Amino acid sequence: MRKLTLCVRTLVSVAIRIPGWGYKVHGHDVEVEACFSSVERIDIETLRSLLTAIASQFDHKPLWETIGEGALIEDMLSEICKALRERAPSAVRLEQVEAKFPGARIIADCA
Image 1 (cartoon, helix red, strand yellow):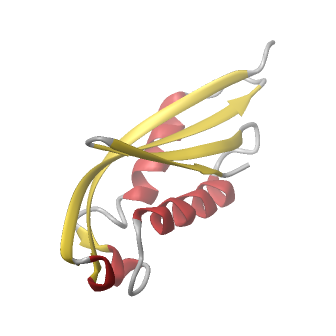
Image 2: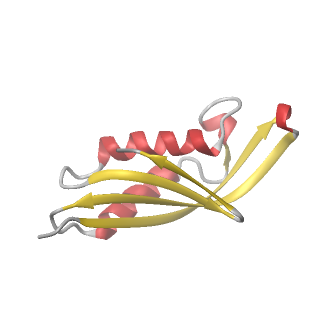
């Protein structure tokens, strides 16, 4: 079988505050997408459920409370990469995690 790329998505709402940048409290609805590669057939719903479970720890919460003061969406992606690498089935390789919000996207290389 050829190498497959499997991407799954979930939606989270997060708040950040960075007074130095002029953001007292700033919120975003963020579509988080994780892409995996595999040469085996994998149940994509298993991957989606895993991403949703991991990302839910950030949903409707301020990032300064879940990650730490000054945390940004980039930091959330780093935490999601780490958790997915630890918990993903051994048959897949996590490639990247992406955050999409109106007018922008951030891509974290997790490989």
